[in-house]
Length: 382
Ligand code: ZN
Ligand code: ZN
Image (tube, rainbow, N blue to C red; front, side, top):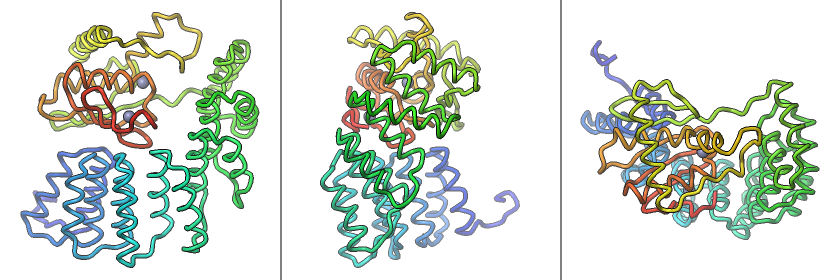
């Protein structure tokens, strides 16, 4: 389009920016922002909101703030992107503060605003605050919570260990609970070791959704933690028989102007030898500072050593190794993962950030993790 000499309009820029957001292609997104400034294009509320969303989802909160402050015209969607973005980056107080500002400015929140607000509460386990917002959504703002709002509340209660209350909330829902809502409760049962409830719900779910990989894995983990190996093997067999595979983990990283994609155990990258060397180096350094692989969430059939190797070839570890090789040491390493980051990778990346003195930012399916000096911004609550 540029070669043809055609000037892009807001619609073009919004589309391209959305593509950058989806891929986490920060550099290209920044380039478009610079293009807008250079050509004195007007940042209307749609373009501004898209820019905020892009910066937030790339973990560049400061740039998002700059765009927000510079906007003369703000729509509800602008506030929503700002509130959700803060929550996504673990800035829970800021997120809730902006929600207050929004109301003070006389902007009426909608359903999406409350998704952001509840997500913020969930990230820090703010049960009372979450309940208040949920109630005010219904009573003050006369909004009907949808299945996602309920799912968020179930997750908030479940993670806090209020399993009974979470289950009661599901049973009181005026709409059909979805897979994610049940999944949140099942995950909470595993986290808090309620095997009785976990088994009851897990069996139910598998009956309702025989193709869902996550439920099989969670239930088998619950059995494993109880020592019911026969049941674990039973589930594993059922999964093989019905050809249910775990959704493969996939991590993306932008380096040298391209997006590189890694899946677990992937050997296809042209620079795999260098990556392998770096993985070895990572392994050595991490062991030296006390890293022990966390193999709780693993199937049993493979032996310990194989497990450890497989664990060390998770997609996010491959991406981190590649980032250490290719990304300038003054720049953070940014990774996007399609699934939730696993416990072991979370622990390992914390240690990498310390041992290699690098800042690493991982956006997983739920939120951002900013790793620095051995700590994560999520404070291990995710
Ligand atoms: Zn992992
Ligand atoms: Zn984290």
